[in-house]
Image: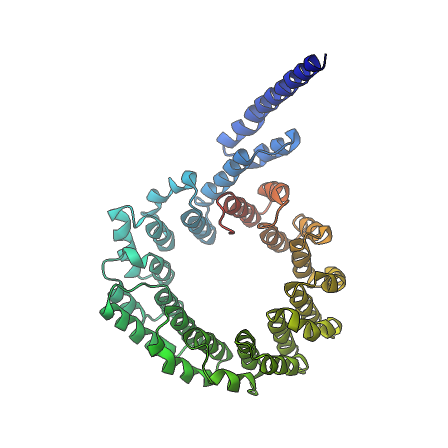
Length: 429
């Protein structure tokens, strides 16, 4: 008798699955084939259940359609995603992009295909030497496929465009020279860029110097610890800690009147076991009259682990909302979410509600996820896109991201499509 009941139940389940698949084929697959994504997703939600393959196909269709948009920014965004996400279906769209009218789109396609095709390498060379500055910057990601990487870097290090010079510096940071000559070129260019007239370029060069790892650049790094731009000083300190973790300059910087610089030095001093110096620098900054310094102190306290808890907890009552939120984050990072929860929850009804919701959602708190999901359905397209980007890497957000494929705003739809494809191909890991 029991066996008969089991057989009946199994047959019923099989029939139900067959009926559902038939409906999906008729009501979802057919409109998707015609490019009617909104109609297909509406039917998918009406039928119920979860089907990752069909949702991925809907997202792919939206990205493919974005390549035909009249909005150049949307087309460039779609090309960037296709080049980055490594979706086999969308990859088939890359070769035609090598002859696209937009130089930036051509550059993204060339970077993605340069290791596979001579035609792509030719486009990559043309992009590096072309008139479009953004295309030159994009093409630097394909440096390894260019015939003379050192010559390209040397030429673009004097580019008239600030962003291109900054990208050259960043590229050198991850470059693997093949010999002493190329290594010397890299060091010379980083020295040159670290003295650039633009602070952003100088900061990029210093971060790259730390990543490149040559101690020959230490004098250039140390010389920028007195740079007039804060971002450059911070980048110099970051490079110093990578090139010479035991530098005596760290102790001096930890007690320097430049509190934002002292805070970053304090974190490194803590890692070196010099706890007293680190705590003093962070405690002093936590009492600073400037809210941005107190926030930075909370960020530093969060990196200290348990030692940072006594520094962060009093700032939960700070008069500045941003400082209170940073103090809560510090406590979460230190392993004490229970101390942070009241402040995070109270911030849900403030101008920083999405920041608080994001932190709560990452802790698995339904109140944070609910706020993000409700914002993803709000009347403001920018707020919807922001909420979706925060939901994207979180579990249990698949249905919300899927529904957003039907959003009335093209940019929001593309945000949802990008999130779903990055999840599908593990690009958040």
